[in-house]
Length: 165
Image (tube, rainbow, N blue to C red; front, side, top):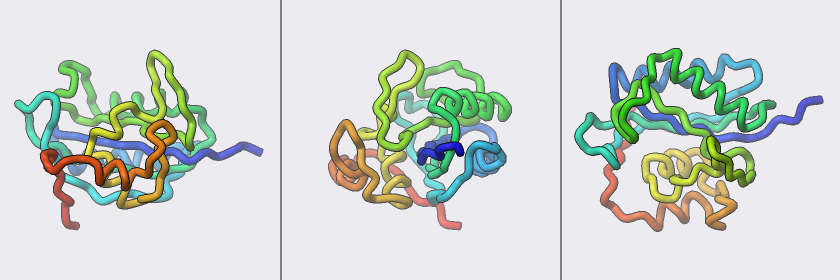
């Protein structure tokens, strides 16, 4: 019998129709045989960081169960990005879709193409706020804090606004 692991996947889009891009990404993720979405956060409108000369993003996080190892999940995420038209041009720049593997259970991994947990979680309100919404006690194994504690430690400078349905 396969072992199913709990994973958290972050997503963001600010080109084309960002809201539709994120909803389509959730749909495509849930269509994967080896991955089942268990919870979805609300969608959030987010001020860009790193490269400010671009439109605001729509961001969300999903919790899923999977039988895939982290590298296969990463491969699936990249395939979904490409299928929706992602082109990698400017680091932290505008994009049709960005999918990030945030957590894979409590696994710590330090590879050239994949780091777990995702290294920028503690500084990104647009990741922490949706994570807190769906699982506030999720524990960051390196920081040794819950995602709620990490969010509480951030300042107010990052603008993240929940999109009402």
